[in-house]
Image (cartoon, rainbow, N blue to C red; front, side, top):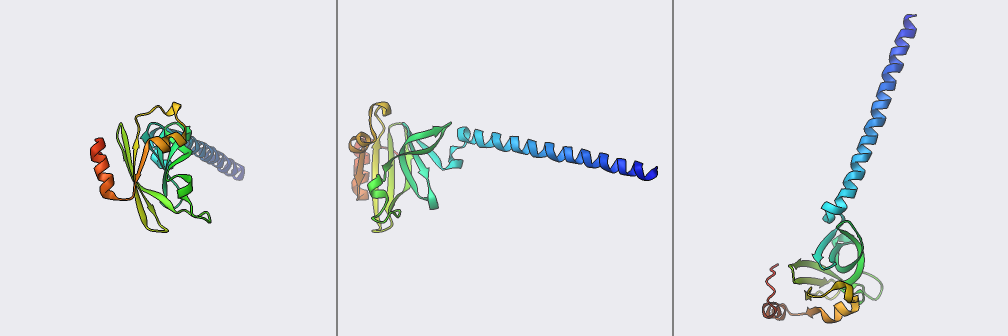
Length: 171
């Protein structure tokens, strides 16, 4: 009889442990899912998405390379993909499909975005000014690239244009 009581106590203890483990795994899973969902709203940079305003985002990709896009796939405050603005698709890749130009840094305020890119093939740096004073619902990406973005190869020209436009953003 004593053996059966000991066996009963062991099975009772194992049953409680199993329930504790299953409930613990369930709680951890619920916390993880809640964090992943809330991160799309509160911490979009966790996913490599940085809002620059007016539906323009800087996305961090492979090996830390960044691009500035007009957002198309947005969940919460996180942009997952978009149409390339800087660098344009033609400048982003070389002739065999490798990354050529990528964003080094970008800053924004209510009216402007400034960005600088680097082309690792020819070691050329470019500077960009984006005017955000437009309605994103009324313009295509091609219109934005052609009318709202200015590109400079010289940092002095870029600084002069920033000064004349009243862009007060600093790196």
